[in-house]
Each structure stands twice: as C-alpha cells, then as structure tokens.
Image (cartoon, rainbow, N blue to C red; front, side, top):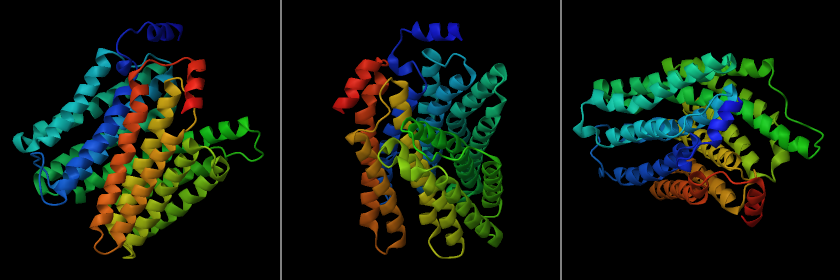
Length: 405
C-alpha cells in the first residue's frame, strides 16, 4: 500500500492522465454535447456524419454505449484501486484506454465507410479492456465483494456486441433486445452502486450534523429488491410485451420508491450534491412505473424510456461526475452556484422531454430539452474541466476556492 501511494506521488506526467476519472469524465461531458449537436439536425432528416446506422439507433447507441461507456470507465478506473488498494492506471496506459474510446466514437461516426465488424471491434475494445482490468484487480486484491460489478460490465459489453450484430442483420437495433439488455445492465449498476453510495454519503453528511434519523443500512430487503429488479429486467429483455412484465415493472418501481425513501433524502435538501442523487434514484423508480404504465397503454413507450435514459442514467452520472471530481481533486464536497445550475438545467431537460413525449406538436419542447441538456454538460466542462486538467489542490487552497465559488 505504501509503495502504491509512493508511485502515485512520484507521477510526473500530465495531470489529465494521473487518474482514470479525469480524461473519461471530461470526454463523456464533451461527447454528451457533441452527440446532441449531431442529433438535432438528424431529427430534421439531415446527416452531419456518414453513419452506417439507422439514425435512431446511432443516437441511442452513442448515449448508452458511447457517453455512458466513458463514465463507467472513469468510475471503474477510479473506484477499483480504492476497493483493492492497488495502483491505479495512469500515464501512457491510461492514454491508451482513452484512445480505445476515441477510436470507437470515430468508427461509429464514420461507420458508413467501414465494415460493420471493424466498427464493432473498435467500439467494443474499451469495454473488453475494462472487464480484463477489473477481473485482474479483483483477483489479485481478493476483493470478491465487487465481482457483481465486473459481471454487470461484462453483460453491458455483451449487449453492445448484440446491438452491433442486430443493426447489421435486422436494422434498426434501437428496438432490439441488445439495446434492452444494455439498458437493463446499466440500470442494475445504478441500483447496485447507487444503493451503496447514496445512503453512505447521506449517512456521513447527516452524522456530521448530529441528525437524529439516519438512512437505513443495506440489508436483506435491499438484496431482495435487487433480486426482483434482476428478474424484472430479464423479463424486459426477453418478453417486453408480456402482461406479467408490465406488472413486474410496477412492482419494482414501487419497491425502489420505498427503498429511496428509507435513505432520508428530505434531510439533505440544503446540499445539492446529495439531493440530486436521491432525485436521480427516484427517477430510476419512476422509470419502472412509467414502463409498466406504458405497457398498459397509459403513456408512450419512448417517453417512459427517456425517464430512465435522460433521468436516471443522465442525472445520476452527472451527479457522480461532479462529486467524484470535487473529492478526488482535493476540493470541498459542496455544490456552488454553478453546480446547482448544472443540476437544475438537467432536471428541467428531463421534465421537458417527458412533457414533449406526451404533448401534441411538441417539437419546440424537444429542442428546448436538447438545448438544456447541452447547457448542463457544457457548464460541467467549463466548471469542472479546469479541475480535471490541473493537479490535485491542497486542503487549505480547496477551502478557499469553495468559499469563492
């Protein structure tokens, strides 16, 4: 452990490549902006880049496997060394992983000029490397508790491979089981990891303020809810139109609402870094309820799906990126006005996207939602980009910066 810390202190390369969260969180936010700027003209029938995919499939893929893939990489490359006490990937090896992600984005953007198998291999390369890294670190660190995380990321990679195959054989892939499997694996990651970090962060914050009521610890009921969630998402992948699947969705949504209410989110309303995570998890629960309602014809399926995609995944990843950047760059864990504006823009974007899916002639609302999405991630780049590209600051300096933010 001492050797690991010493090697980290002796790193002399660019700060951007000193820790996995730095380049991947920055690139994820930049791609969230860039992909949306490409998608807006696509909605009007234009094609700014020579993609070989159905436009809706490209759009869905570049969010679920492009943007989210970068966030997962940044999270895993930062969290796994903390779990195992081993040296993080840094320097040229980290730059190589970043190169794999960039190669995937270029291949997807110019897929009309590439064989589909080449596009797929380039796009899958980062996830394959990540799964190998996680498996090695868990094995060497004997950290068996986190094997489910490795399993879910492997499942996520398999879903991406299925997406490519389905697009090649029977386009469009955005309606196929590969897309649903990738979404299901992502939602299970949120339920698993969010179920660890949200009550933990909340408990620490409340305990420091001597609150009388603290979040419920993880127990058998939480494990049972995760089990039910896995069954529901498996049904969603295999039998999305079955009546039993719709009822399972409603049950699972109610269980996750009950779960998040046990975490005392109403007590952290003065700290946006915390309440935004509670809201994002609440959108996970709401997404299950909406999917169930959509199955019974009570709302459009795409609208329900965007509660998960834009809301649960988009908001949760943005919240994690903000908090992790502040914490790992030595800054105070407090959301200043800029961070609050980021969260509010994202929440409003999700709300308008849902309203647009229900209302008639809502093109303007769609564009406004997209504009707020771009604003939220552009503001992240402007606010957090300098933190990600500069060395970690000392505690006193961080306190001063927080006071001035």
